[in-house]
Image (cartoon, rainbow, N blue to C red; front, side, top):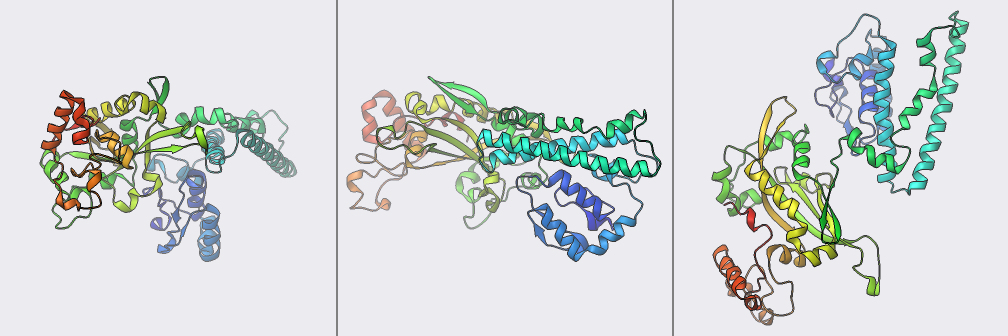
Length: 449
């Protein structure tokens, strides 16, 4: 019976009744950003991305399980609201109603907060509209609770129970004003932003000054720590690398990874793939083009299979700054927090607890840096001019020869020749046009193999 009511989102949580299982899904997971759950009853593989669709399916196809669950002597709240699986047992004694009320309140508080955040972020509502909707929800819930309490009090009074006495606990249960606290962290956009870190463990960006502009950096170490602790990601980062494939399937099949495999063999290593690009937050025309252009850097975890890395859920923002700041001060200044932390993650690493309860130490290695032609040349230390001179960062082809010859006819760039070109440009900046190189890459200090 227990296997029929295992929560696929929690992996280990099991329930004795269908009702307890549904209550757990509604309270814990229904408002998740990427909610998707399998039915799981009697091996049913039907998947749903909405809680009420799951309920409708169970009522239609597994109604016998609902009827059977209602007659079982089982206290649902003991199993649903306990964060410790060892405590999810059947209790025959009375339940402390004040404790139960506080447990439900904590679960509802998080659900209400997720709802408010979803209104603002998913549907991109203006602050004033967001506050109006939340205010209407507060009023609606207060009216529902008030009407429900009146019905319950009437029933108890007709049954001979005096609800107007001096029983403080009873009066506290019927006090609907305490539910005003549910909205204390999310009734305005400012409170939602302020409380994201406390309620949802959001990693807050750190301000970094780049010239006359502000840049915001999201700690790569904190993001990686959060990712490796997730139950659906941990199995992929703990499995060993297989770099003996005869054909190219991913980065770990290439020569670059094989050359450093001996250095990382036996270690828990996280593979970092960066992507940098610019975007306009508005749509200006004419002379105002580029005025509000932003430069953003993202990363994906290379330990995950490619089918998961392409999902937006697995693409994480690392750094964001105005593009004018990058043009004025350079990528080295704008990316200083990122390069510093990348070096620390490789040399020192970090230790964290995994879902199984044991601790592991991880190191992170920057594998690739992607971007459009302009960003890639700037980050790698090549000229950002494509109308003359050496225009390719892969070979030594010049712009005048693009129409006449193939790339195979030219000498490819390699680490040794590139180091020579960088040194030549350092000694004489006029060599920049000859070699197509402006200097070392901002990630040159991270070269460890």
